[in-house]
Amino acid sequence: MPQREPPELGGGPPLTGIGLGLRWEFLEEVLEGPTHDVAFFEVSPENYLGRGGYYPSALERIAERYPIVTHGLTLSLGAIAEPDAHYLSALRTELTRLNPPWHSDHLCFSSAGERVLHELLPLKFSVENLRRVAERARRVEAFLERPLAIENITYYVHPGEPEMSELSFLQGVLEESRAHLLLDVNNVYVSSVNHGFDPLAYLRGCRSNACSSSTSPATRARATISSTRTTSRFAKKSGSSTRRQSHASARSRP
Image (cartoon, rainbow, N blue to C red; front, side):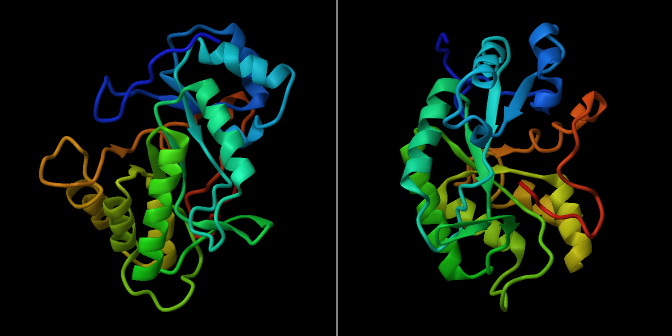
C-alpha cells in the first residue's frame, strides 16, 4: 500500500468532517461507493491484528481512498500490569501499515494480570493513578511513534474514595502525559446522569482548561480531538449497531 504523510495534530492540515466507524456489515458498500461522502473512517485495529485474507486487504484498499483513524479497545492504559509487549508490537506494525494521524484508546483498565475483562472499567481518581497513567501514556506514545489520544469513558461507580473530580483527573493525565483528548460527548452526558455532575461545566472545562486546543499558547495541553467519537455513529442505517446509549444505564463495551 502506498505510504502517505498523515495529517499532523498541531502541525499539518487538520482532519475534520463527518467520519464513520468502519463495520464489516457495510464494508462492501464502502469499497464500491464514492470517495467524497465521508471525511474519514475509524477502525479498531484489534479486529485486524494477526489476521490475513480478505478483511486486511479490503482495509488497505479503503485506506488508499479515505483517511483512517484508529481507536483501540484493549490497551488497558490504567491497569497495574504493563501492556502486553506482543500486543504493542503488533499494534505498532498495524499502525505503520494504516498510517493514521493518531491512535486512541480509553482512560480505564480492561485487564487484570493476563486476564482480559472485556469491559472498560474506571480508575480511582487519585494522584498516584494520575501520575502512573500519564507516565505510561508517554511511553506508549513514544513506542507507537505517533500521537496518542485518550477517551473519557462511562462508568457506574467510582472505585474507592475519589481524591478529585473526573474532570480534574482527566485534565491532570493530559497535562502530565502531553496526550491528546478524544472527547466522547455522549459519555460525558451518561456519566453526568449516573453521578450527578453538570455536563456543560465538564465540557467547558475541557475547552478552557487543561483539555484546551494546542492552538492556545496559555496551556501545555495538546489538541482536543472532539469529532471522531461523536460523528462516527451514522453507520446504523447500513446495519451497524452503536456502541453506547444516551441514558443512565449505558455501559462502555468494546
